[in-house]
Every structure is written in structure tokens, then in C-alpha cells.
Length: 172
Length: 74
Image (cartoon, rainbow over all chains, first blue to last red; front, side):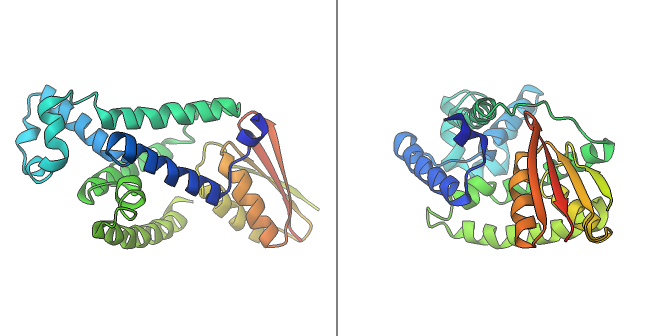
């Protein structure tokens, strides 16, 4: 059993499993898999603790259908989106422990740290402008017949192409 | 025949593969490149790429979560 956990699975096995699990999740919870929504609420919750009023911003008026219920009736930090995100982290940890490949990662150098931070911030900001990340917009969006997911897909391809060019030219 | 080491520890995909392709271009026929990595995807993608391009390749997990990929330039 451990041997099949040790080696990465093929793309099609992973794809089929993810698809089936997303259907199960939708059937059980009424929400598709998404990642950045949970972090968005955390960020807004932190701003609120710091004395700002993010939930009065235009953004939350626009996305009232999605986040309104949570803002009004639930804990900003502990809600279904948080559970989804914690599940990803716990699940990955479990997988890597079962394969006995757990290892604390180190940063190679300062340049890597700086670029990881810049990249992370840009990805997070972009994900919010696009109403989701790879998972929410693309993986869950296209099967839901959402047009925005196709637009997202086109620009992800363009962005990945540009990112690769920058990586090869400046970062290697 | 020379043996060269390429340190790709703590570097995420696809950087190890791009570095390997770059390094191999500067090497002579018969030389061996040893790539050190701690990314599980490196094993899969490097072996796949090497086999497609007719390089002799061997993947060894030296300790849990750390790999060495041996690639010989034909």
C-alpha cells in the first residue's frame, strides 16, 4: 500500500480523483472547491481587527451573494472556506507522511525569498481580481459552465507564457 | 568522461529541469550530470524528459524526500 503512495500518480488518475471529489463536495456542502475566498475573508477579518471597515467596501457589495451570509451569520475566520483550506494542508501533510517524504523546506537564498513573496502577492491580487485562483476559477468554474472561467483560462495561459520567459531570462 | 554535480535543492519545478537542460548543453558526449533535488516531481518530470530525448537516466532516492538524478549525455 505504501509503495503506491510513494510514487506520484499519473495526471489522469489525479484528474479523475479530483473531479469525483469535487462532485462529492458539491453534493455534500453545496459549495465547489475554492481556495482564495477563505484567505480573502481572513485578510478582511484581520483588517477589521486592526480598525478598518472592509465589509463596507464596494468589493463586498459586489460579492454579497457569495460572502454576505458568512459575514452576517458566521465567524469570519472559521467557516466552510477555512475548513476547505485547512483540509488541503492536513491532507497534503498526511500524504507526504504516508510516503515518508516529509521534510522541512529551506530557502535557497534571499533572492528566492524576495521573488517568492513578490510572486505570491501578485498571484493573490490577481486571483481576487479574477474572482478565484486556478481551483475556484478554472477547476471549479469550467465544469460549472461559467464563462468567466474560460476567460480566466486564456489569461492564465498568457500569464504562464510570460512568466516562463521572465523566469528563463532573469531568474536562472 | 566527466561527472558534474548540479545543486537544485530547495528549488521548485520547473527550475531544476531548465537548469539541467542548460547545463547539459555545455557538456560533452558521455559526460554524466548528477542533479540533487528535494522535489518529488523532479523525479517524474526529469526521467520522462530524459527518456523522450534519448538520454540514459537513473533516479535514486538517497534519503526520504531527497533525490539524485543521473543523466548521461549520449
